[in-house]
Length: 166
Image (cartoon, rainbow, N blue to C red):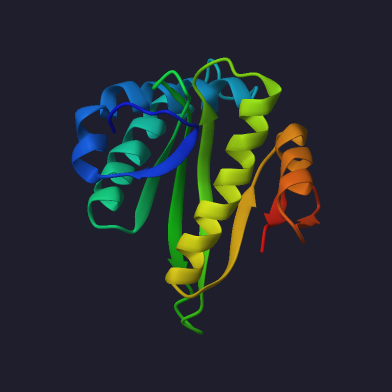
C-alpha cells in the first residue's frame, strides 16, 4: 500500500489490517452507531460490537472474511469494506456477503462512483474465483440500495433490506 497514482480498491492483508485495526475498528463502530438510530447510545450495541469485531479480525486472519480498502489519488483511504465467504452447510453453495461498508473521508461524486464500480468488479472477481453463486448484502440505508441499483448490473432488491448483487 504505497504511493497511488490512481483510484483503487484492493484487498488488505491480515498484517496490514492488524497494524491499523484500532483505527479501522473505530470507523466501523462510528458507522454502525450512526447508521442505526437505536445503536448510538445503546449499551448493548457498544458491548457486543467489541466482541463481534474481535471475531472479525480472526476471520480475516483465517481468510473467511476479507477487508478491502479504497484509496484515492491523494494516497489516502476513502472507503473500507468487509466481505465474508458464506458456505451453506446443507448444499455447499457459496455466497459472498457484504458484511460492512464505511466511507471514512469526504469524496466527490466521481470518486464515489468509481468506488462503487470498483467494489462491484473486484468483489465479483473474488466471488467468481471462490465459486460463489452470488453476492448478497443487507442494509437499512436507502442510499445504499440506490447505489447498488445504479452500479451493480442485475441487482435484485428484496424488501429494501436484502440485496442480491449477482
